[in-house]
Length: 194
Image (tube, rainbow, N blue to C red; front, side, top):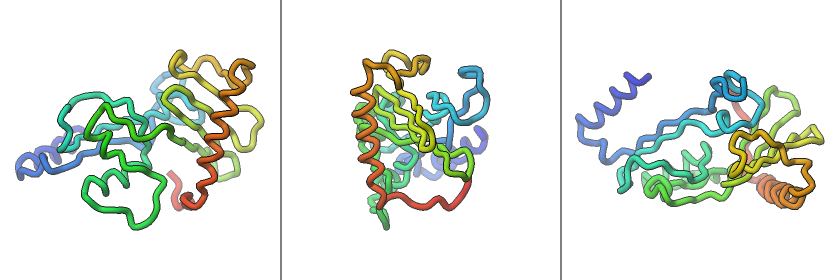
């Protein structure tokens, strides 16, 4: 893969278009690679699984080679690329343009991201609401959930979902997630299985 990505970059350099090209390198999911004793991909909502490899080179970025800590979602890629090309989407999208964050690594466009996981075509679905500091995990057919303070527990080793001290935060994040869910007019039917 490195060889073929290199061929594409070499071609862009050779024909002089690399300075006019937005380059996005991403994956559709992370991989545990032994994190928490797990391999592959799957149900647990650990950061190794949900924070996918994501590299962007934007021609207008003046501070290249920096790491951005801005929340971004894979659904943002469409809107961001269209915006970078000066185009608008033909229909509404769940994504938002990350062009500003791609140009300035200190800029943040989103205050949260949603991650959904459906391990089978049945009714079970795991929904994760992520902010800069917290991660709330809900299960649509289960009474339990998960809540993590990523600022103090990035390994997600302490589930705060039932902790009495975090009930108001859990209520606040659950309400914010529910408000996002009400945007049903932007939800598209699943057309493929990955």
